[in-house]
Amino acid sequence: MKYISTRANYDLVSAAEAIRLGMVPTGGLFVPENVPTFTKDEIYQMSKLSYQEIAYQVLEKFLTDYSQEEIREVIAASYNDNTFAKEDIAPVVKLNDNTYILELWHGPTAAFKDMALQILPHLLVKAIQKGDSDKEIVILVATSGDTGKAALEGFKDVDGIKIIVFYPNDGVSKVQEAQMLTTEGDNTVVVSVEGNFDDCQSAVKEIFGDVDFNQLINQNGYQFSSANSINWGRLVPQIIYYFAAYADLLRDEAIEAGEKINVSVPTGNFGNILAAYYASQMRLPVNKFICASNTNKVLTDFLKTGVYDINRDFHKTISPSMDILISSNLERFLFEMTGHDAEKINGWYDDLKTTGRFEIDEATKAKIKDIFVGEWTTEEETQATIAQVFEEYNYTLDTHTAVGIDSYQKYLKESGDQTVTIVDSTANPYKFSKSVLEALEGESQEENEFKILDTLNQVTGLEIHRGLQDLEEKEIRHNRSCASQEITAEIKDILGIK
Ligand SMILES: *Cc1c(COP(=O)(O)O)cnc(C)c1O
Image (cartoon, rainbow, N blue to C red; front, side, top):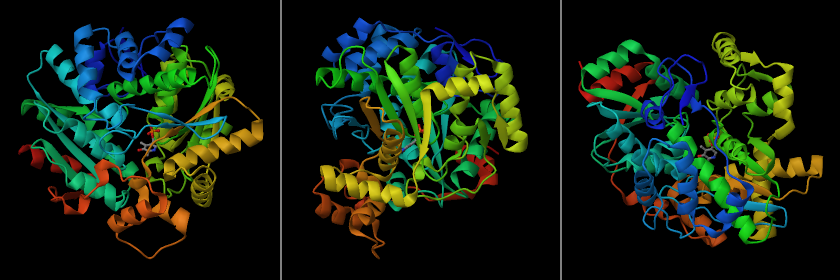
């Protein structure tokens, strides 16, 4: 299995190379040359397998340059009783006959990013061993909160790798910030950046494309790589849980073999929903993909009109991990939907760069509309959904999952589609305690997020996630900050380069 660039501007590479490089060095993203498939019976047989065994089946198809033993080692190191507290790595919880919640936050940092970031460092270490580079890998991460901590936890104390995380000083919660700033490990660095997430992400993306700077880094014995969801090694592990969830539904007899499901995904960078799409290309029976957005609804508008337009206000919402205007992984999706037409992708992304917008052709638009639905949720609706679901089902949603539920409910109302639907739960409610508590109890003057955790615990009775307990007592270990234009200088300083 080889990987190609969405911009047709790079040679074919192996999975290990794609993972090592993170992004195509000349711009663009790596995607598999063709998507492998399972038979209907293979998918049915997964209902008898563990998460780890399903993971093996999926990874083996994509990582053909990794040995069977390597894949098994990587899985064992990533998905175990230490990293995931529950025996069930990604449990499916029934809300009602149509609605099932896929809990993706049982990893160490209480966010769905753990699903991929527990495994990526191990995939990367093997990838480095396969190459002939003697450079130390420096992982650069731009985060809107959850990715940063999940990456830090995944990479801390992994030999031969350094990780530098940049987060927007104005775009993460106190709990998220505390999680990051208390990270241990000798190879971890955390930097607060002035501005919003898009500024932060764009600055980091530019560094990956900055040939001169990369050369300078190389001369000093380093090589950049990415842990953002643009890295194929982030995406492929996310395909696994869609098969595992389907297997759960089969096991519980919620569906029959071959029956189609819907998936509703609270979306930001488009990685999670893209993984669901790839699962469907591997023959997982999916009817509709519901792309759920908050008030930063650039994707909803795109799915309705075929115009992707970032010339709009950026809203800070109570679901901050979805506060994104440039959804990087959309590029991969469009590449797939155009039948790998790199010329179109180049045109659209040139337009995006120069004008902040692009418009896709009618044929591609129709193809997308056939399977994707865009819905969005206001702040008030997010809060109301948290209250409604708690009252009706005694189940506590975080703000992002609430967007997924509300968007699904809107779709259900409009379409009457009774298909069994999986709604991805992308964060444990304690990660966004203040907003969740306010949704349940009304506005509060309490500003101390750590106290709020305890209050939420009293109101819901839900156990505080282990990754969020006792955060105030931990030592702050990081104190760097810079402007988004200074990121290059900051990196030089961190690596000791003149
Ligand atoms: C990252 C994140 C999302 C968005 O996922 P994408 O793969 O970027 O679309 C949604 N919710 C939470 C809690 C997240 O951390």
